[in-house]
Length: 391
Image (cartoon, rainbow, N blue to C red; front, side, top):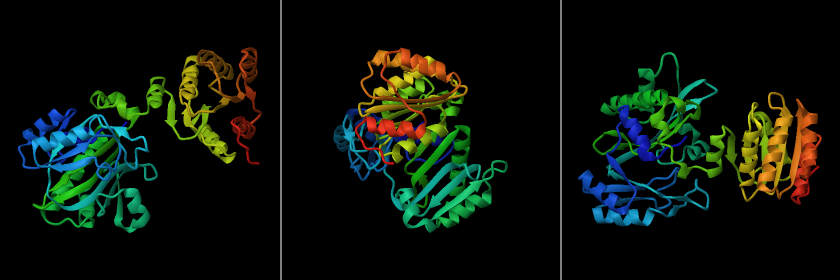
């Protein structure tokens, strides 16, 4: 789960991380009042959407009066902001963040992620603040420092100093950075975060080290422990189909293709998407119904697939173990009747109760293209949308 910048700063501030003062606003009038409340000659207005590149897209501006804050907020609120991360459709701006301006001397990058290879949380730091870390990794990988944190010992003082020196921090800045990094690590652990990104982390002209921007993501599996974090979810920033899927405990990710895929098991789902691409088409989604799905869950998954107007055919690839083939078949039949299936449906089933499942599909009256194996299924679904499957 992702949250907005202003929410991330509120969370980090609770743990002692230094962040500029600011106030969220959802109307131009609130933006003007927020400027006045700061009591500063200048402030920065930032569009609040779950995407990077807001500054380059015109979503960030330095203002010098309440009237200027009101006018800029009016230009942003209720309108889509298109960045390199949103796609051409953009994201509608529903809030802005009015923050005190900072006199920036240097911009740095600081991140904290779960490093699955190292089996620990890792700190990522770079002198190239303000840039996408992926771009830095591609062009100047030598400017990225990665420091794993021992989960037993925790963040050691020498590690904080090592990173601070690598970033060119000196004197009192080293101590400030150590305290900041400790606050981030504490926040990361205690909120079950999966990502903290401070880009840029800045050194101001008076020598202070502060979090000028902040991004946080959380492990969905840990949200049951954090009612306060869960309340920060903004459904407007999420794909409606993904939000609907979460209600049924379905693992669903929206993609850009036109072949809807329903599979049980993440590994099989990845393999299914690969083989669809191999035969010349693109998957419209990743959808894992799980091993213990019932017919209602399967029906919900099928409805979600067909709610995507770009889906021109559906491929169901099931290996029945815990997930029984007859249960799947009944769920598909129920959903297909409800939505009045109008696109080709290719089904490949193997495993427990497979004969019962095939009989349910046969007796349903629904037109089903049966496939013998994964390759046959991929070939048939690609041909069903009018493409020529490669050999």
